Amino acid sequence: MIFRYKNTLTLLAVLSLAIVILSFGCAKTPEQPPTPPSTPAPTVVQPTTPPSTGTGATKPAGDPAAGEKVFNAQGCNACHVAKGSGGQVGPKLDGIWGSKIKLTNGQEVAVDESYVRESIVSPSAKVVAGYQPIMPTSYASLPAQDLQNLISFTASLTK
Ligand code: HEC
Figure 1 (cartoon, rainbow, N blue to C red):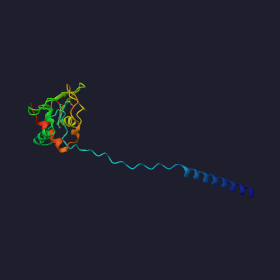
Figure 2 (cartoon, helix red, strand yellow; figure 1 turned 135 degrees about the vertical axis):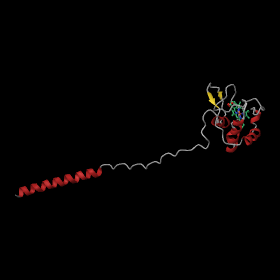
Figure 3 (tube, rainbow, N blue to C red; figure 1 turned 30 degrees about the vertical axis):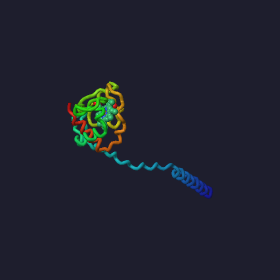
Figure 4 (tube, protein in one colour; figure 1 turned 90 degrees about the vertical axis):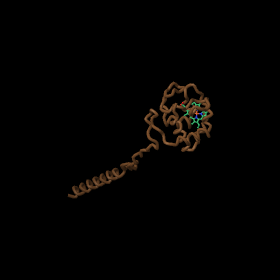
């Protein structure tokens, strides 16, 4: 009787020890990493100007008459023909809007708002075939409105 009782006690002791070890082991299992905070869905940035069709058909925002004043004040006319007069260091701008021009790398690009903007603020990014990249880079600092008006003026130039 005593023997059996002792046995039961030992069994109980072993069992409870096992439970303690097991629960300790469970407590030690690494916790799940916290779920990262949900990132907000990317906001779509609406273009400020109507998307270009790539054909140059889209007329840009801006005031062509104000753009013509900037054109002359900034000395663009020293190098470019516009409305039939101006220097011939750079390509003639009359009638280029909506056309395709060839670059020195052999590529053809459509003359649209983004091309003309880039041609003014970063002239050597795309160099017109037959010309040297000598247009000043300083126009990148023109006020945004002047730049927009210059683009509008360029778009108004017909052959
Ligand atoms: C010192 C001369 C010079 C001045 C000043 C100058 N440009 Fe140019 N421009 C060039 C030359 C040269 C090119 C052709 C080479 C190139 O693409 O960079 C050119 C290219 C361009 C083109 C691309 C023309 C095409 O047929 O694709 C545009 C648009 C343009 N210039 C606009 C302007 C405007 C607007 C101004 C004034 C804010 C200006 N340029 C001032 C020399 C000049």
